[in-house]
Length: 156
Image (cartoon, rainbow, N blue to C red; front, side):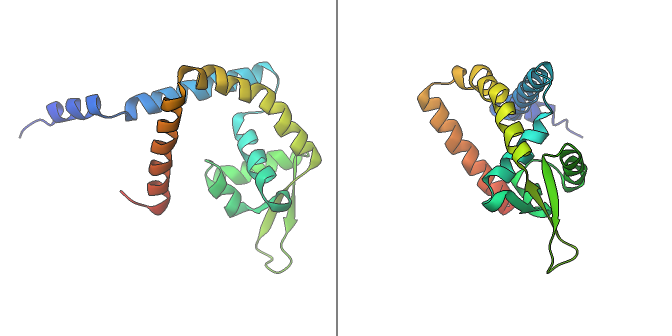
């Protein structure tokens, strides 16, 4: 049986995946460190609050919130529990569908999202954006848009 090690090595040299995954993990860790140092919640809180802030009337069904964040449905339920306990969101039951519930952003949630951005925004600029020129930024945005579109469509 032949080894596929040479093919794997060639793929690793051609693929940007290892650098992307490693870079993503390291940048998120650095951003999380900055949020902790500022005594702010974890980045997942920001993602959920930002998704709600962009939604009409600051409210989304739980499954919609899961789709708009990179948080799994089971983790999202626990996250919304914590956000609700902190007074950053409320849950609003759907009268038409007793099984459904909306997560609704509170004024405190809006304020927390803005406060977190004072750390998160500069971290993005310092740790990521400043290492790219305009053309590279446009190219990466286009590349990531294609990848995301294919992933959302379920394409291989």
